[in-house]
Length: 49
Picture 1 (cartoon, rainbow, N blue to C red):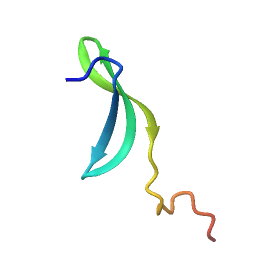
Picture 2 (picture 1 turned 30 degrees about the vertical axis):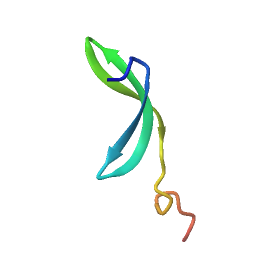
Picture 3 (picture 1 turned 90 degrees about the horizontal axis):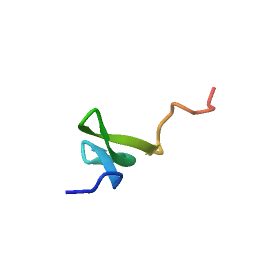
């Protein structure tokens, strides 16, 4: 039971991956993502050649 615009943490397989706020869109609850949390060991932005 959180109020509208309350902070929310998003998890996938017990790992927090984003934070956001609870919002209402067309009468339905949704989460507006504010920050995506990096995993730290991702090679996606690696500069290795």
